[in-house]
Length: 278
Length: 286
Image 1 (cartoon, rainbow over the protein chains, first blue to last red):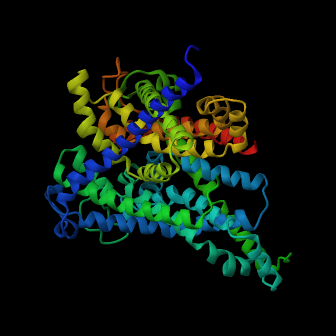
Image 2 (image 1 turned 135 degrees about the horizontal axis):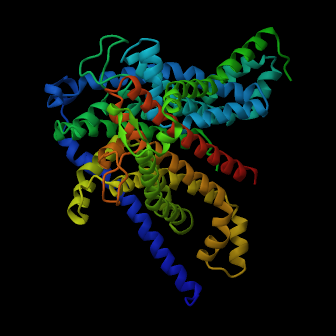
């Protein structure tokens, strides 16, 4: 090479700096565009009125309610399963072929595209179990989707509880289960909550898995079995069909702000309570 | 240690059952998708599905080749854009930037991983598609647009995993190299990156999985014509969009063919997952 190592380093550094700026600027551009165009659309009315005329008029109240219901069901199902799995993996067994299978299953599940979850939810919940396009079908599909996230974060949270806590508890004569419920889990709560919040974020933003399980009916959900449209699906339809760009921007802004708040909370909790692996 | 009394044994068994939930969900998904998708593949012949070029569901012509090629093209394009940007950012943030800048930028990048994919698609539709149409010609809805949007979407994944694996390289490696008179860049290139290689590769494969499995963002910018694109400025349809576009109204064999599309997607993803798992396991072992 003709360049001296020092010049080479300078050139490389300039390139790295340039590339990093592009990456960060592009990502920030997306945020700025959504907020700049979306914030002017937001008003109390937008948040508290139901959509009218296919979404051209009115607000997005019914879609907010549907999103909350769906997310709630997803977490109601996924949290006990995920935390239970994490307790088993960390407290009740040693590393073996069995735990490797369980972990491999969770990791594969995490990699499955949401559209596959959508197909699956459609055939199982909507068709075979006859729940139809409903809050229940959508919620259960999302539960399966966020399960790996809850398992992983709960496992890390439980692992980071110091071994001494358990030993002291045992030495006071507690059984394993007492040690877990009264000592380990209470100290792991912030970490477990992190996983739950992370899952809320994923559920709120999901479209592909929801559109074929919860449907896209534009009305206030009245029961577990009513078909309803979440914010993300509403946004997708408004934008894709070109129904109303101002309303699309408004919906996107609500979506993005909700997700930013959730992710900032997660980040704060993570930094504070979970020791990062590396 | 404590002895397991009767109660604890019961708890242990119930937790074991719960612990199999993820594995069982995976199994059930696999069974359902294959059960719905494979009969039609064998009825019309695997060859006509994998290599057939015509997708006319109403005429019972279910060639998936354009979608398979489409998925591979946009995924490859996403990697061409996302990997250099992502790796450069990760190297910069770990080795060259001020610690304070990194402490600020890393969480910002991770926050952006949570932005829903429909939002990325929407931005692509509003800004990128018109830009391509006006400057490069064609309809704008194209392989290029889909690749760029997917490349941006995988950035946070690639960056944060690469940062983690570069940080995991012990400082003594760097010190040894610098002590031998190497510059910082030489150290990064010859010592740090090779040591972090398997983690970085795992991150890229995960990004690849995300790109190939992405649906809504791609639908919005790709144009979705079920033909093999002749250039990167032409529209393209991926496996995922094929399912999402037609699932709403498909029935009978048409619906089964969409599940067959799911089967092919599923197999590609499982292969990628297994490779990613194996590479990151290798890094952990070291």
